[in-house]
Image (cartoon, rainbow, N blue to C red):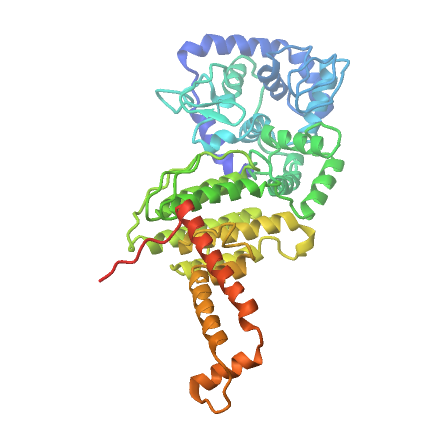
Amino acid sequence: MVSFESLKSEYERNWANIEIRPARLAEANAVARKAINGKTTYQQVERLTGVPWHFVALCHYRESNFDFDTYLGNGESLKRVTCLVPKGRGPFASFVDGAVDALRIENFVGTQDWGIARTLFRLECFNGLGYHAKGVNSPYLYGGSTLYGPTEAKAGKFVADHVFDPSHVDSQLGTAVILHAMMSQDSSITLDGSPPNAGRSEPDDDVASSVLLMQQTLNKLGANPRLDEDGISGPKTKAAVSQFQQQHALEDTGLLDGTTIAAITRAGLQPVQTASVDLSQILKRLDNISQVVQPGGGTPAGAVSGGQSADLSQILGRLENLTQLIQSGGTTPTPIAIPSTGTTPAGLPIQLSQILNQLQGLTQALQPGAANPVSPTPATNTPVGVLGQLLSLITKTVPGTPAAANPAPADQLKQVVDLLSTLLSNKPVLGQVNGALGETIGKLLDGKKTALGIGGSLITALLSAVTASPNAGGLAGLFGTIASAVPGLSQFALPISLALTAWGVLGKLEKWAQGTAPPPKPTT
């Protein structure tokens, strides 16, 4: 959390060193005169709030260039309800009424410490403290002085919401520059930093801890962009509050009122639901990978061209893209270039470990209420080790949820595991012929059906030709016993064996058609 005490010395040092640029001095004096001309109106606000009139004048300059028909909080017309944060304010009968409302919202009413450090701190909070993170003095305070912009200091400006341009120089005069010029023309302005009750906390300090808690909760709920947890209710925080209010059917003000604080607190106590992700897109991408890495595989649409050996860097690159796909809620990710470490055996363990790390990130992204990804556990750098940890990862994907509660994602995740098993073991996915009796039986018989069928046919033919002989011994006696115990053996066993042989032949033809048949073994 950013505190006033942590920035106090910086404000005092800058004030001691501030110099108005000679080219901007006449302009600064002219603006100061306009501020002083409205002193009577600003003093009415001071009597009602305790906020010094010169502070009110400075806020008025930055928000609406001294237009007394506008609301001090955002420069909108007094005659209509405000549409910018703070939203829903007004209409107001006079500038004074609107100014009192704006200062009350900022918790400035009843404050007592109005020394130069506090004054500059509150002025900057009115606009936001984002420039500190950029290492640039805020132009909201120092524009037109030697403390901001070349050649004496750094430039930079937030040219749009959350968009910082380091080369842009704000042309508007800063409030500290105008205050410096006002003090040279009006000796009644004093900056006494010693409040009557020393050690008493200021009203704006009292709410900082509550604002910090709300910022942390909104970040947990997925505030985008992520809020700086500084305890300051600046423009970004108000925009995030406004978005939350719209999403939860609350009055859209952008302010942390009691109702909104209670709603944010309740939402923060509930499990965070991640965005719904269509796993079919993941399956499609993994299908493309499997085609690339299979021996003889072609190049699918949108895939990287492959060769006879699998370049695991391609898998790693696509898993990076899958992580982006999940985190972006299903939108098309930006492809990430992953440098290949080669396909040599020496590079294989490193890439397998990287692949498992990506899969762990994918699992975390799929878990409801998952926090920021943690460092993955080092993987066993073998296909078996990777697949073993894969199975444990998938069981964590929907922790504590019955399988029937989410059948479609569970089935799709099973397909993901099967595809990845194929990738890392370099075995092709079973086709329609080889997988006709299911994946388990299909894999058990894969590559064995033809041999089993031919062998079964020969054995059946031999057994059918054996006649039982009570005096026969050895194999002849055994075969005779089997043949006599199973009458009509060849009538049903031989067709089964022949069918198994035909099934095996069809399976091999399917593999050749797909280009997934294993290469011939070299003969010596």
